[in-house]
Length: 185
Image (cartoon, rainbow, N blue to C red; front, side, top):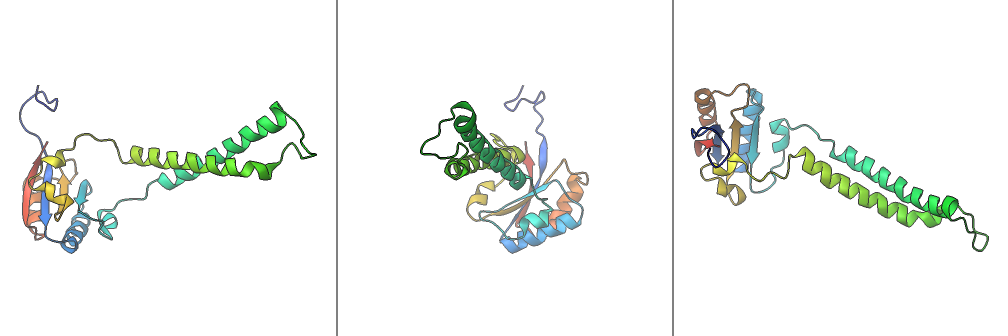
């Protein structure tokens, strides 16, 4: 068995990666790849490129909805704990104050709402992004270390329905990259 758990030692191709000189060329290439019908692709740049996610056809996620639900759950939990303690479990009137003195409950209600929302946002972001991911074949790509400094890359994965090694390579080479190479798993 090989180091990555494959039964045979024949290297598997993850996809093809094209390196570009600048973010505008990457954005144009990504748009053309999406228009050509490629869907299993990813783009890498050392800084955020405006419009790149839209060019890849990335859909909106549910992180904001999960965060909102987490915030409401936290707020209801904070208010409910205080209500239960002050009204039901230990009703003790001090200075004629009502047992359900909701203005006094607001700081903890607010803080638990923020706490639950933060944990929901973090957890859903990790879940929807498939993280933590300790290994990804893209790190085997030639010159990929430049993606964190000055390289711009577009990778079309072999899991794409349209992927054909020869045709996809010709397509990528027609987009004006510096280089097109295979990514081995």
